[in-house]
Length: 436
Ligand code: 5AD
Ligand code: SF4
Image (cartoon, rainbow, N blue to C red; front, side, top):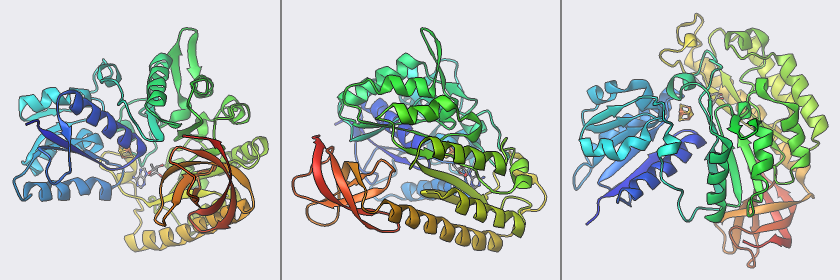
């Protein structure tokens, strides 16, 4: 009987993409997917971005060690593996293999070695060594086009866990996009920690993200393209123009600002100011009317005063985010901010997060209300809870619920938005635009 595996992924979409590729790799090596409760090999694809995320791995290891029917072989992959390396095995001897995000193509070999640690950032990129994509994928697929970061925001572990910024060559991205389209993907989300800094090699030199998007848009079957996450410093006019010129490129931009006060942005080493960000957003909204803006925020960064925090709230109101993610600052070992003076007490972080999330939710509801009565295309992705109900996404990434027995997953339909909830919209089918 063949051995079985399970991959559990934490953290960002890039980790979800890596988890997919780890699954494909293990299957190419003869393993078969199974539940975590039964698998012979369990891969924990970890996240190191905040302490809470990083600690989850140790509780999972504890549970796996005590698993009824015997412990599996345990692999710690992802960003905790990169950041903690051998420390993981010292703290949790039940772990067999530790493998970083740039070395996981070697996982089958590491498993054969028995116990192994590999946190190299090898010269031969993992992408060249990974097996082909699956023959069948869901409606939406992630595709990593760029990885790593050279920006060194003072709070962030990414430059240490994912390494410096690297763009995949254009031909490699396009080949993978074609494979995903042939396997059934209708929407591609191009991923990178700094995706708009993409500068991939092609025959004619290098291509920007906008150039890459124009190429991806030519692939038959790809009806929608998204990209995330962008940095304000790398936002170019040609990318903004692509939103006007490429019909498949969805009107949605995730452009994290992190905070609203200049002294804080300076200490975060963000390379933009409140004013430059607001001017940028105003320009983008003028050029691409109706584009949905989203962002990320950190509250309780060292030295954050009440006044700094008020400026974050006022920035949120001024931008009018369609949605946004917000986090309490979590000191990460080895990053400059972890040892800065003025660490903010947990109770203050809690109160600020609560208040910020209230203001973000107000903005999201306002955005959804403003969508009422609009007609737009919805790509249906999954089954809803009610009989005959499907859930899809509007161009602006709102979840849209439609009850109509004629719809199938993978369909794109013209829908009228008839009810606005804080986190979703209700829609009515107008007409099927493109069948799955
Ligand atoms: N503490 C809290 N949030 C963080 N982020 C990154 N590092 C930290 C940290 N140390 C947030 C940022 C980033 C998102 C992916 O996670 O908002 O944009
Ligand atoms: Fe977490 Fe960042 Fe690693 Fe993604 S890249 S898994 S968010 S630490």
